[in-house]
Amino acid sequence: MTVISITLPGDLLKKFNEFSKTRGYYSRSEAFRDAVRNLIAETEVAKMDTGTVAATIMITYDYARRDVDLRITEVRHEFDDLVIENVHRHIDEKYCLEIFITQGDSQRMLDLMGRVRGMRGIQQVKAMFMQL
Image (cartoon, rainbow, N blue to C red; front, side, top):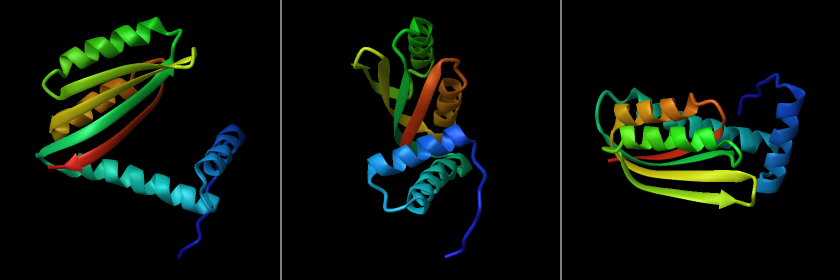
């Protein structure tokens, strides 16, 4: 294996180390490799000229941000042709978790993800794709 070096801000490194430990990774390197594999899988969908994919898109945001909830609802309706199921859960009293189960055109799916990622107040967006 090739050894590389990266530079991270201290707070990001601290979070990454905590993440690695809680997820049970053997090493930082293994956690980093897993993150890179997930990122590459997502970009493989972006490379598709056309095609149908299914995806689960998970979105987290602060419960106090009611404006985010409204904007997510608007985007969900804008992409109603893709979103076949939507789940909204409160996690403790601090966070909201929104899950979109989707199926449709790969480029439109990436547009949906881009819209959600571009929203102010979103903490994290994770997706798992399956090419059909």
